[in-house]
Each structure stands twice: as structure tokens, then as C-alpha cells.
Length: 405
Ligand code: MN
Image (cartoon, rainbow, N blue to C red; front, side, top):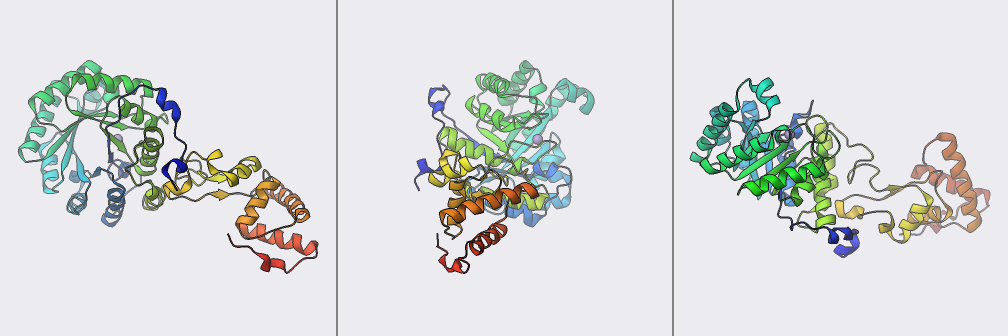
């Protein structure tokens, strides 16, 4: 199947002016995702997830926060020594001991963070901006002196006065050697318009690649991440299934499918997304909601007769992209909204062929059953109903007529 037949391109994008995206993904499932309450990944689990991310073409994997425990340090080190194509990154406060832990792990990149918002300075650090920035610069210098690449991350960027942010970034960029400057919407306050403004302003005032790290407290993490990319952000942070602190982060599956459908970026192997989602769901104990984009149970489920009938002719009538593109499966549901044409298509697809009057009888039975039980009909139940219809019409035993599809 050709690329253009797998999804509908958003052609309205042709009318929107933005610079071509120059992005990479840093997936933070194994760090921010693990900070989800109740989530803890073992070394084997982190290796399995990282290996999938690597094989999909994700450029950077944030493996953890080594100073948290000896075990965490061992895990980050194991990931860093796997020989993945992806660069391995870890988190570090602006403290020498944290950088030492990162060094012990042989990571490629260390993400050194401080918050510079009044809220965090006053209630978290109980220290002033200059003192915190001084600590950050010392830690950055220490890390670069020891051969690490550094991302300087401004936690709570979205609630930090923008001039303060610009000055601090400029200062760090001028005085130290940093690979990335990272903007974090720590409490998920941004929307796409303000994200665009924030990133555009920072983009104009620095010469270093910008990262964007969005949280989903208002359900806008993915939209904000894409807005940031349009405004010039290079590194986009994601988590599988959008797990993470509170409402979670921008979801990997949403971001990379949107990058493909909206921006034509097709270098990530999206066919692995469904399996990866299941893996992270199992390891984290968090199942995505049924209506979760791309990987939710209903993402490719259809019951409405009008929809199913159209889909049987051309799936793109009601699917933005085909399930195969993300390693998923279409699920045609038989229920009270099922029409005759749709039911015919569905029973044909599972190997049965009915006469017109049998089909009419079956559809009546389906409606009665679903309305009585208030739920849709399973495949087994449908097969029983088909058998019943045939018996009533006196053609029982014609099951051999099953057609293969
Ligand atoms: Mn975060």
C-alpha cells in the first residue's frame, strides 16, 4: 500500500506559513513516565522499552534519574551501554553529586535543571535566582569538563517571566557549553498560541537548539508540542501512552503520527506503536482510555451502520489513518446501530454468506439482543445468531458454505 493510501494528508497545512520542521524526539517514558504515581520499571522492562524506541528511530531516550538510587544508576548505565543508535540522556539537579552519578552511567547527555519562576524559587528552593543560576552554571561546567553533553532545562519555564528566561539562557549559552536549552511547561499551563509565542521569543534570542517538554493538565500537551515545533523547537519530549506526572506528558504516539499526517515526517516506524503501547501499559499498570488517540481500544472500532458500510468500501471515509500504519486492527462492532449493508459486510468478512431474507431476520435479532442487553454483540454470539437464523429458515447445516476472506 502506498504511503498516500495509508492516511489522509491535512491539506490545509499548505495554506499555513511555518518554517519546515527540524525536529528530533526525546522520549522520557523511562524517567518522567516512571514518576507517574505507582509506576516503577525494572531493568528488563526499561531495556525492552528502550530497545523498541530505538528500533522505531527515536533519537534520544531519557533513561532515568541516576541519583535516585543505586539500582536506578545501574539501570541507566545498562541502557547507556547497550549500543543503541539513540542517544541516552539522564536527569540531574544542579548539584555536583548528581552530575557524578550521570558520569558513572556513561550517558551521552545530561539534563541539568533548575526552576527560575518566583513560585519555585520561593517555595521550593528558598533561594534567590542568582544563587540558583550560579549553581546551574557550575554544574554545567563540571559536566562539560568531564566530556558530557548538556541540556540546560528551565523547569516551570511557562510561569517564569520571559525576560528572565531569555537572560538566563543567553548567559548560560555565552558562559558555558550547552547542547540544548529546554523549556518545560511543568504544570501544563500553556496553549498552542502561548507556546508559539514563548518558543518564538526564545528562538530569536538564543543560538542553541531548543527543547520543549509539555504536560497535559489541560489536555493540550500534544498540540503544544507541535506548536513548539512550528515555532522552531528542535527536541520534542514525549512519553508512550502519555504517562507521566499527574495528567502526563505529550504522548509519543500522538506526536509522531501527527508529525507524519500533518508535516510529512515519516522516518519513525509507526507500525510499532500499538505493541509498544501495550508493553508500557503492562509494565506501568496504566491502561490508556478506550477513546485514547491511536492506541485506545476504540481507536479503530466502528459500530454505526453508515460508518461501517462506508468503511467496507473505503476505510479512509471514517479513519484518518489505517490501523496497519500504527500496528493496530480495525474492529467492526455489531450493535443496535448496525445497518443491513454493514452487517452483510461484517458477516462476509468472518466467512458467512446469507440470503437477503436471512439477513433481514438476523438484523432484527441483533437489534433485539443489543437493546435487551445494552451492549454490542460478540463474534461468538453473532455466529450463534447466524446459526439460529439458518435453522429457522430451514437451511441448517449449510455452515460449510463459509467463504474465506
Ligand atoms: Mn515533566
